[in-house]
Image 1 (cartoon, each protein chain N blue to C red):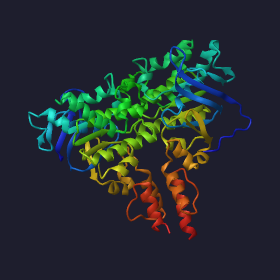
Image 2: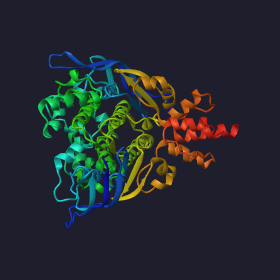
Image 3: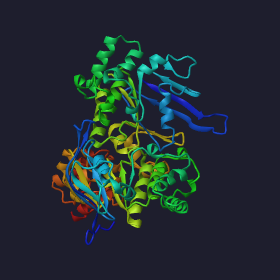
Length: 290
Length: 283
């Protein structure tokens, strides 16, 4: 995977010193959301948000599409402030979200009807909706299921339909909020392959929230949240090589990183590895040196 | 408590157009003290099999012994069985229903005929065992808790009946890394007290490799392997066609084997791997 170039890129999403608390009906704060977040996401970037439960990942995602508006600071999407009530639908049409449980996101009994729901609400003409559905199903490789019921699909297939439904709204950004958490390994792979393909081939900006460290390895940038703040961010290698910081955030390293960091600590001359292949290569080189 | 499965077969919707054979010719034994992993892709029959263990699905063909109970017999003492075999379903936090944590955890023991006092003392013990502060959570609504805490309350509700066998269907699915580790350490702790036998369904091969002493592989309703994780994952090709992938340590070991670096004993955990390298395997 080639490194993402930040040159001459403008951010599609800009988060500026944002704080947000969950409040009761009297306006009193009942739970911390996020604190002082600064984050720019660039067009075409693949960003992974990591953090333990309650670290603020999902709150941040909800701030990005105007589900929540900041108490302090501002969020702009393609130059539009999420506080601008009149333009909230412009923002929602630019950012598509897919959540953890696909069953919560299906509204119709037939897949093509389910997919039409979004664009219909945006006022897209009927003919164009048809075209978009055909295109989106083709993108996620589910065309043959068009007339079928979502209830007959596997978890991975359902999430691909959920992604296709979001694509039918032609968003610039796709946010996957733990969309792989309930899937088996095969389903997870289907969803991850789809997300990567959209990012690489269609230039879609992808923001992925996950507890699986393996899914963070191929990101352009990893952002780690802890106690509502950004703890660290950078390329996967930069982030995961901060071994102690990752542990303190309640996260785990990918297995290959764990092994390589322990070996490095023991004085072995191998590079820090993210993938099984990198680690194996490092150990083989070590052997050939001796 | 020993569990013996003999030639178990199960068919959904028999003699109808929707007929589907879910299990066929399954034979194996779970010994007391085993932590046994059941693995297989979605639709391989894992859940159908595990639901037999406390008679949520009745034996329709073959034999099933749980301790001295014969589950294939016409009459089964379901109360006794379900008290002995605790079953944790996928996403058990969705089954919480009572107004308070204490009520929820007491539900099982009360239904098994214990007095209120006894049930509450069992509940207290169980809640503390799963790592929650009893006085802090007992009067809270289970719905106020975080995802990891909810799951622990659900587990407390099962272990409050002091089962001797625990069947866990994907116990760590959807949890963050810390929550996963907490649950698995809890299972290890339980094994040291009354719950000696654990049957665990998981898609996470790294967990199976680290925590199970035996593993059963199901494929299309048939038993493909009954072996130890070390034997099973030794040959990375063995799992081809089952939709399963080996744990990371096994994959790294097989990449190294291609380059002439052979482990005498397959490492199943990070510690074992590092120890093998330290012991001079690569040098």
